[in-house]
Image (tube, rainbow, N blue to C red):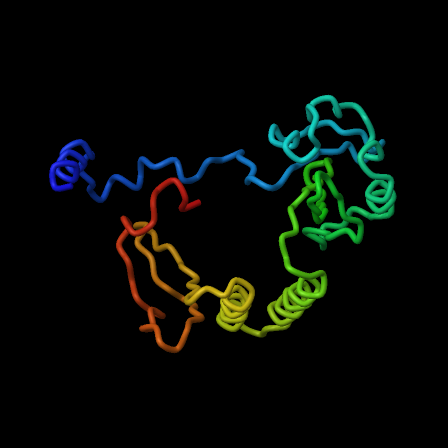
Amino acid sequence: MNLSLSRFFESTPATNLDTCDREPVHMIGMIQKGTGLLVLDPSDGRIVGVSENLHEILGKPADALLGAGIGVLSEDIAEQLAELADSPHISHEILDAQFEADGAIYDVVTHAHAGRRFVEFIRNEAPSASLVRKRMRRCGSACSQIMGALTLRRRLQVAANAVLDLTGMSRVKIYRFLPDWSGATIAESRDDRMVPMLGMHFPDTDIPKQVRN
């Protein structure tokens, strides 16, 4: 055992404060596993773009859908999308219709941007539909509180509280970067047993360069 550990440490590159800056943690353009994405031309509903991993949901080559209407996947989804009016005030819309494939259920979320409509398929792994609706109500309540807050400080605190509530994490921090890329915690929601970090400052090496923007 000691010999194998020695070999491990001898063969593992040394780590320093610049190591994180070389990690491909941003992965711009990637789609998370368990999800899929379609891009529609809203003028006629044709599919003009697909994520490479959509075949994992559909069970067939996703690029075969290019040029077709989304109705080939689901008439319910197509009807609900046709009823939506593109509005700059709605960033995302969760459809009532769901998509089922290979025994899995996917929620369908859509938004419009740059003259295209994006349709996301997100696997629903919640234990019950009622729990999903409960979480959605929490999100709606938090959004209303954020929009109605009179100060930025209150808006940030509501956001941190909501993320903590929805995720079950022990701590949620909202971070502000300073001109030299150092930063400070400007809002925090946490388990009472944890040491507070509100107002604490961190060096520029705390956050990798590739995920700062």
